[in-house]
Amino acid sequence: MYRAKTTRYSRMKYRRAGRSGLLMPELSLGIWHNWGLYSDYDVMKDMIFTAFDNGITHIDAANNYGPPPGSAEENLGKILSCELAGYRDELLISTKAGYEMWPGPYGNWGGRKYLMASLDRSLERLHLDYVDIFYHHRPDPDTPLEETVGALADMVRSGKTIYVGFSNYPAELLWKATAMMEETYSIHPVLDQVRYSIVDRHIEEDGLLQTVADLGMSVSVFSPLAQGLLTDKYLKGDIPENSRAKENRFLKEETITSQLVARLNVLNEIAETRGETLSEMAISFILRRPEVATVIIGARNSEQIRANLNALGKSREFSDEEIGEITGLF
Ligand SMILES: NC(=O)c1ccc[n+]([C@@H]2O[C@H](COP(=O)([O-])OP(=O)(O)OC[C@H]3O[C@@H](n4cnc5c(N)ncnc54)[C@H](OP(=O)(O)O)[C@@H]3O)[C@@H](O)[C@H]2O)c1
Image (cartoon, rainbow, N blue to C red; front, side, top):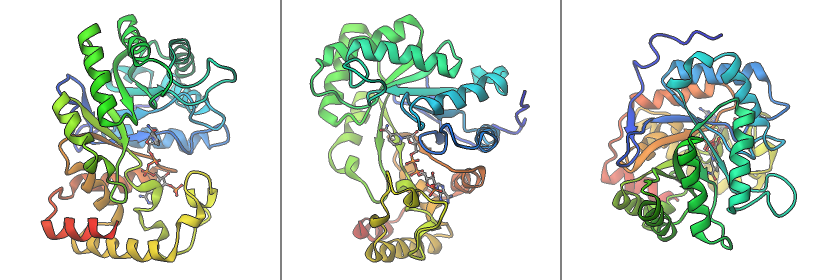
């Protein structure tokens, strides 16, 4: 059993998710990458311990994280049950379903049969009786929204999740789904989990941030470092061995063009002027928005988590000039 540091709550700040009782750490850890079957278990343990010891109480999973799908939850479940069993009430564990998980017509999207079965399988892998947040991972254009919303509501009523949220739902759909869940089931969804970073500010522009505020919800932000672009990793223009771009799957090598590298270097200079690293500024840029409940970072080791935790001591104030310079680049 791991003994967490007694100082674990001395540094982190917690933000309320919309008008709910859910308090989320400003930084959360996601297990999309580096948590599969062939990842190093000791490194995973070290990442979770480092996170929890520094007040990162929220770990974000999904049914399909791996590879293979499910293995990230299995690894997390092993750590939770073997090392952190005594700390369940101090941890927020979220998971999701909405992408392909098993073959056939019942292993994908937003139908009731898939969602219900998927949560049960996630709980088995995680060795948990309940998760804290269950998200529908992406909109399903074909299943009636009533069915997806009803399945999420029943998950809350059955006690298998405490809160529910949506992920990748655009403003209008979020509005409909939330109204339906509140009016029909008296359940208030708390979050929309969305991509947001200096290089991808679509939620500032398409009305989503305003919508979550109007609905009494918040966003949980994924890929705040644009999968590593907003770190010092690619500033020299090469693609390091241990990098997501080298894997060439979700971040393609061809994305790292000389034009992009030049713009990242300008961003880095702005960060230096502020007395910050690029990744610290990227995290502060997201946390400057009150609609954000938490920033979910990914990491390949605990050093990256420690580096990103340094963003917590940095200013979230950006002058109009800085915002203009930053947004002018992307
Ligand atoms: N709901 C959804 O549809 C959805 C989609 C995507 C992600 N998510 C969630 O969001 C989480 C985070 O997404 P993400 O992994 O794309 O986030 P990210 O924080 O933008 O990228 C993380 C990657 O950046 C690099 N990195 C992080 N800190 C670094 C540092 N200090 N210095 C140098 N490199 C650093 C590492 O990649 P290297 O391998 O290059 O070292 C790390 O794996 C996921 O784990 C998942 O939980 C949700």
